[in-house]
Image (cartoon, rainbow, N blue to C red; front, side):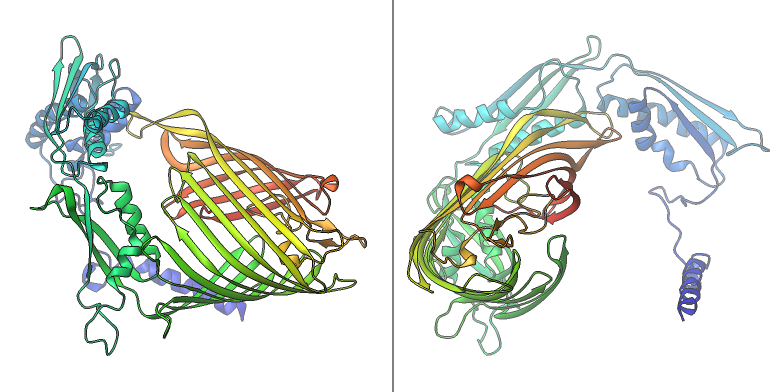
Length: 636
């Protein structure tokens, strides 16, 4: 049976490959042509060789107009001579964009013997580029209605500070264009969304190989945010029976966006507001735009063009991780519960380590940004050496700002342990407050900054007996720059610098109670895995009971140091980084029993659009085993 399937698959592949031999009229592929209308698969009319420094050779071979006619059918000597005349001027123009304004060029064409010829003619372009033009001076002028104010002078200082071209550097056209564009983006990012370049000039002295650069910017009016106006896309308004009305209240959208009305215009703040609306779950698409046409700059309205999400939605998911194996999940989302009007997200998730059923309800935020929430979950998971059936109920208020999240809530925990000589089941009630600050340069792919989070809870066990307890946790992550790594641009025109860095991470926790108190294991600590101590399995570092079985402990300590360095391939900038790291972590029931377990390893990172894709190979020193750890995305 397997052989029949293999033969059938091979026949299908042969049939597909044979389709490429058919003419277009019978379903074969269309022949491709270049911009000059010349087929890409025709015979060569001539070959082209460039003799120059490697970076210049690559650039000319890629951009010379002459290359477009290599396969031109029936190309005659007279036509070739005309093309060669144009090629000289074209090559000089291309070299000028690299800063070579006085090159010496020689074009030579020879006929080749028919018996051994790859093409009837061979063209050789010899290039002596001469000295590359250097930047002699840079003059940046900014015209602004508030040029004498602190904000106006600060904007000009930011342009000069971030200006990438300095006296003594090589001049290239692409570098000059990029620098002007960067200065304009700097102005438009804050306060001046209508800024423009009024004039720019690169004065080249070909005799001295010097370039004098001058650019003039006009900031235009200074803008402040006005009111947010929500416009729902046509054809998406309302659900069945709603008579075309929007599903979700526009006032709620303004509270979700938290756009600071009256504040100085900031592109970053507007993008943050757009992201908050997009991630709220109420909208499938969101686009925010500042209205600068005929409006008062002191109160310019912001238009939010949105496409509303469905009232209810089912989401089916599948995945795999090195910690918990294959994973299946089913999510149900209801964006406006009857009577309450809250948003509910319910989940069923199954994997090798845990089976989970949960539901989380959240209200729209009030004018100050606080929102009520409530939720519950029931879970069966492997915790240390035991199977634990647990439940949790939680309710309180939360607030999320640009950088800071905070919440205050009551929580009920129940845990039933199963296994040989398992600890007794227990339950607890606690009041908690959590605070998280994120001060990174990027939400999805941070390379600078730090994050800090802490949580404090106080409560009492309910069963098997009442005992007061206090639970504290803290987390910290800091990216420490180690300097620039210069990576040469792909065409050799200019270099790009990327930071190498250290990622320092620490985590700690403690549960304070009398020695005999039966704290639910869901309130105790275990560690190990992709995001904690690599080289060990998921939550495989814990405390040991009297029978030496693994269980949650009252004290947690984790630390990590990771060196992250950008990777260059063939001199080109890439989105890949290499890493080496060392992790250490420990869990114990007494501070004196803490004994760190070490994991060391190396890995790679890919800066994907949705966050870093991480692949690490780690060796657990105590476990004496290698483990592969895979992870997508950044979370703190």
